[in-house]
Length: 108
Image (tube, rainbow, N blue to C red):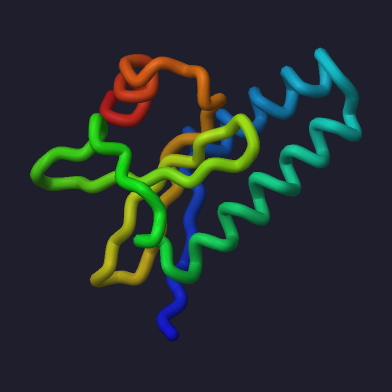
């Protein structure tokens, strides 16, 4: 069985910090920690069979394919480099964010 190396980009790390901070302010530090752990566990699971999740079609172009995995109300967006066996998590966002705002962040 092939195992991929999973890398979380600085942009995705910042997004997770913002999500955690907002949850801590609105709910509690315990809830924020629970969400961080759950998202982290989901990200780690991408090391095996990352292609099993849906494509984020509005982000894909001829050169790059993005996929997503959902954890509760959060969307984890990533790409796969099959040659180097690397999964790159590029964004973590609340599932109610618009496609346009996600596309601006991911594609610059």
